[in-house]
Length: 185
Image (cartoon, rainbow, N blue to C red; front, side):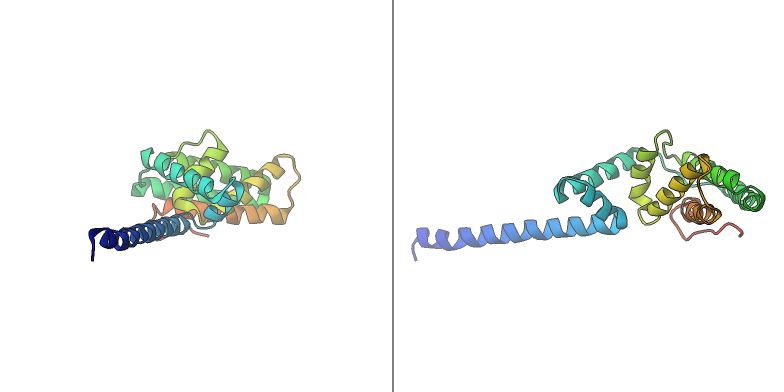
């Protein structure tokens, strides 16, 4: 066989192997993003102009998150937040709107204590999505009800739901990424 024939056989094989390797790498990369962000992956990709743009956004969130100083809570701080959550829940009985506002402030305070920037709600969502993508919808729903209650337009059932939603993110933030430590009900 001539050198030209051998090259004509080897070059296409190498190109096919390279294309397959790149495709496999992209599939693995996409799978990792889906696993890390959970439902937030779908939301972000659907909101973007394309899948690639959505995935670029998610990778940018990861990069920003990596630059944050997210830290675990020490036991005394964790216990204080647990007590504060119990107080907010008890407040719900007599003052449900105030309790929802206080739950929002408590979750925001806990985010800040852990090292998340808390100035802008949309940025909070993006920053939280990296580690808490599965509970982020809870936070959105609770925040929406909190806004309704500010205008005194939320029903008691919506307020109760908001407390449940805030609790989901609260527990996850309190857990430091490990097994959730449930605050007393």
